[in-house]
Image (cartoon, rainbow, N blue to C red; front, top):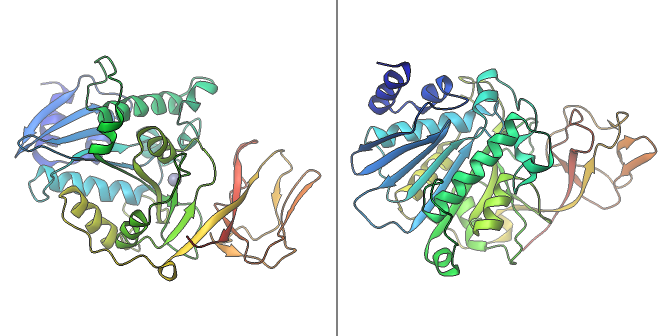
Length: 357
Ligand SMILES: [Zn+2]
């Protein structure tokens, strides 16, 4: 028996997708398809697993992606435990679900990425950079997401998607991360900019039920994974930050009970208990501007351990880059994702302002 067959049999028996993906992180020698209980399991590529109920008509498609940054382990552990419970018959599913471990190679080396930040390569942006692992990975993920939402195999000719299809099916995408920095609000989500208009307050209520009460509203198209699924497939898609990143096995301080329970209820189409929407229940932020690292001389004037959503008095020098300075000019300006080690031309931080909807 080949190593792949042995690993496959263990996966079919135990449902340990993390262990399986650790062994087959770059590619799989052949697709793996099996039936379990009342659903079909299909390993489509390294780290990409499709689960489809067999005996009922589904109306909901859910993508749970983790490890888009390879070292963000807590969401990977949570999703893989969920996969194991589904395969062992402990967790019902009545929806089609695509589980994605985004960057298995970087996961195995404990790094954010190998060559490029994967979450800057979606919506075809991978075509604009020299060929690299993350570029190929973004292309592979996009192909499988397209096939998933359009319900065909990637080897079939792409069927054009009709508006009716999109209206008929509920589409969700939760792209789960953990943040490099600590945060004033531990869990938060980025609600991608929507070309077609409005934020849906019902989606905010759902996030609240998942223990996500701090939301940043995107203000422009981006190259993130959640913007891709929101924009191309009209999915209810979010980048969700669940706390501070830790290595595998060291996430015991992070309480993921509510999001874990909520996502599992979503998969089984059990209703979430939704509170009426009230701005007062949330910390809502609009994006004021992005701070971009333009030269090698870029530096922050705020402490290295500044937490996400720290606000500053008007007139505070935040960052300096050659002859440019960023100085706060509005009350309650706060910073998110400060990271001075990014490549030149990339985002070193986001300035946000409290808002209401
Ligand atoms: Zn991340």
